[in-house]
Image 1 (tube, rainbow, N blue to C red):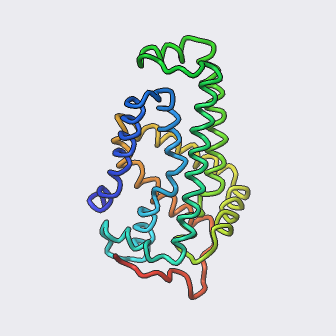
Image 2: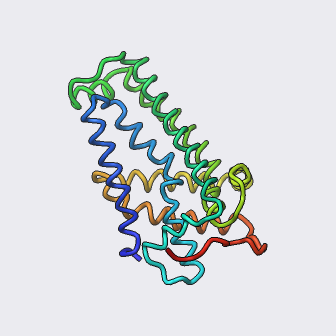
Image 3: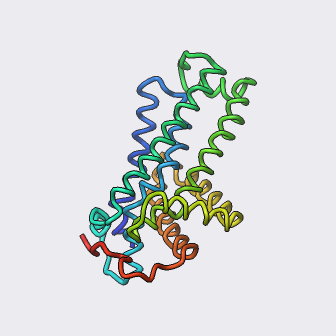
Length: 237
C-alpha cells in the first residue's frame, strides 16, 4: 500500500536531512554519525503510526494513511509516550557519550572542514580508536533499546497494559529467542544503513517495511490476548 504509507514514511528522510543540515550548520560535525546512527534508537517509537496501520490491516480494515492517527485513542497512549521518552533519554545519553569520546581524543575544537574531519578520523590512531570504541559503545546502546522495545510498542498499542509490563515482556522475548532477535537486530541495522543512502531517501521505503515486520514479529513471539479488553480503542480515524 505505497500510497497509504508515503505520507507517514516521508517524515524519516526529512528528519534525517534535518539532522544532516543541523550538523553542518552548527559546527557539530563530529556528531553527524552519532546523530544519524542514533536515530535508530528512537525508531521503535517513531514507527508507532505504521504499527497501527499494520494492526488495522490485520483486522481486515480498508486502511488509509489517516488510520494511523487512531492510536490517539489508544488506552495505553500515555504509556506509549512514557516509553518513547525513555528511548529519547537513551538517545540523548548516546549523543553525550559520543561527544565526550570525541573530545577525549581530539579536544574541544571543531574541524575546519569535512575533509579535515575525515582525515582526522581515517588517518590517525585517535580516529581509529574513535571508530572502534564509538561503534562498540553504540552497539551496547542498540542492544539495550532492542531488548526493551522489540515488542513493547506493538504490545502497548494492542493491549491496555503498563509500560513496565511491556518492557518486561520485551526482555523476556529477547532472552527466550536470542539468536532470532540477534538476527532481527542485524537486519534492522543493515536495512537502516541502506535506507540512509542516498541522503536518507531510502528510509521512506525501509521504515514501513521494518514497522510491518515488527508487528508480525510481535504476533509470532507474544501469545494472543483472549480477554475482552483486547483492541479496545476504536478503529479508524
